[in-house]
Image (cartoon, rainbow, N blue to C red; front, top):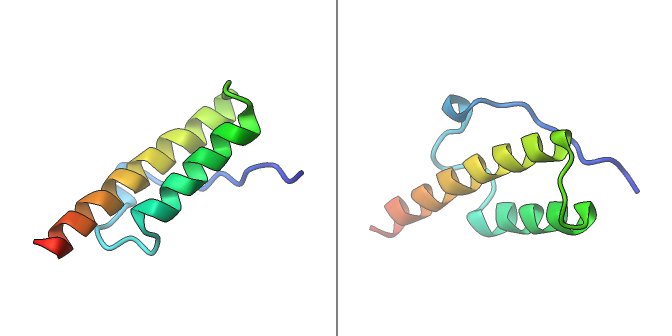
Length: 67
């Protein structure tokens, strides 16, 4: 199994209109939890936090588009 790839980004670097949809990011979050077996390492926790930021940004972008 390949180790999860950690992409470093700050919350400010995530822009509206993310390349990935909220659903895609949500699936990656779910996959991370499945791989981790319910307990995240420090590296996995950092990846999770970045994914949550990306997911929230994608959700906001989708809401703005729908409005």
